[in-house]
Amino acid sequence: MARGARFPRGLLRQMLRRQFAPLFRAGYSVWIVTRRRGMPPEHRVADMADDYARLIAEEFGGRVDIVVAESFGGMIAQYLAARHPESFDHMAMVVTAAELSDWGKDVDSRMAHAIADGDTDGAGTVFAEYLIPNERLRWLRRMLGPVISRLVITGAGYPLADVLTEVEAEVSFDSRAVLPHIRRPVLLLCGGSDQFFPQDVARETAGLIPDCTLIWYEGMGHLRAASSSRIARDVLAYIGPG
Image 1: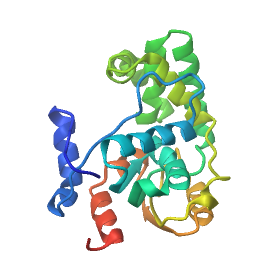
Image 2: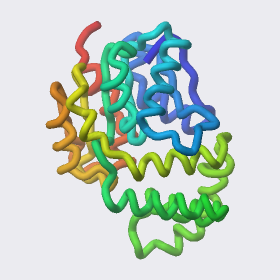
Image 3: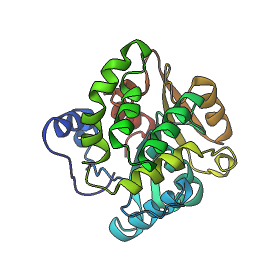
Image 4: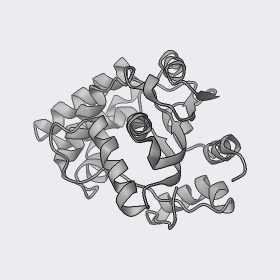
């Protein structure tokens, strides 16, 4: 979190404003920052963490109050915390862990192959498995695939090559070696029924970080936990009055 606020428009903007309302009331401004554009094909999660550290140095005076990093962003935050502890005061990692589940890797690998083959509708159908994992609803995923492709893959305003780079980085991600080097306190918020980051891996992640507070969102899957209104409240409770 830093000075200033930028939000997407429409329904997503309203959802995010509700989710972050406790932070606004506490006097914070919220910046939502995605990955850089035009990443080299060999760019991996550690490199993306360096990108964020550079952004903080150049645009936010070298330090931000709070980093709240969700999902893939949380994977990057693990390296940011280890390599650039000077860039933030507080760190919260949400619905993330040291390694993606085998199911998540399988979905990502198939999506990467579809993108590499130029089959963007097929990639959208694979992406739909994130939202609709029930195999009995494969017909619905096929129907939604082209729509998802236009919304998330081809029409999202960033190069298709960046999508492929990010997916490949996610599949190869394993942060176990770097986690013990995190010397700042970390709040880890995890869904109890997350198919991407199972409980055993989340517990292992918390155990490898020297000073980590792990909070479970019981009964919540990945998307539900990531959009929970509890996140902002739990972050504020963790950092205490500032």
